[in-house]
Image (cartoon, rainbow, N blue to C red; front, side, top):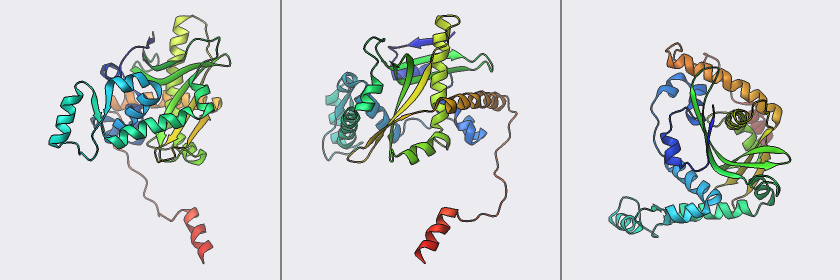
Length: 281
């Protein structure tokens, strides 16, 4: 049985038992990496949270975050005084705060992005920051997912994920679909699986059409954005790879997987580098 939570906070989601994709994908790189403890919240993760909140939950942005004083570093007495003044709100560096708002503004100026974040006028309202918890029937692991937005378009359900990135171009985002440490394609399939499981559990025999879309925004001034609809055949292939990944994780937990080593090879420069060098001669 899959549970859906539309009012669960991020902290509550983090406290939920269950394996999320961010943890699971570590097994794709190295079994030892999967078993290692989480590194905690990094600056990049904190910036991502602020950016997501600014776009998806602007009311929460105003209630939970406050712009820090100019020219004051974290850890200083002046910063501590500003934190005390902020009370329960989280103090954010001015540059981080402004970047999050400017990126959200840029996304909202992209009519295709706004279109995907909203549902059809006669469909249920889109859901922001919706969480799912379920038990995988094949491997028996408890899993979870937190989806940025679930909207209803063209008689289908759309999992919409907001990505902040250095490069939102089709080449860069296409590469991140299938390469480490991103694996965006499997991540989107993981989210689609959560939604499908929940919808099917609500009505026996119901086979929902669940599609996936990525909204990407660059983190540098100008903040170019892009909207990418993920190929359904690719999603189905990635869903099969999730079964393989979960089976691998079960083996890792049972101590059946050894340390990963790459094969010994003669290493040569990539072809693109050779072509570049030949062009300069």
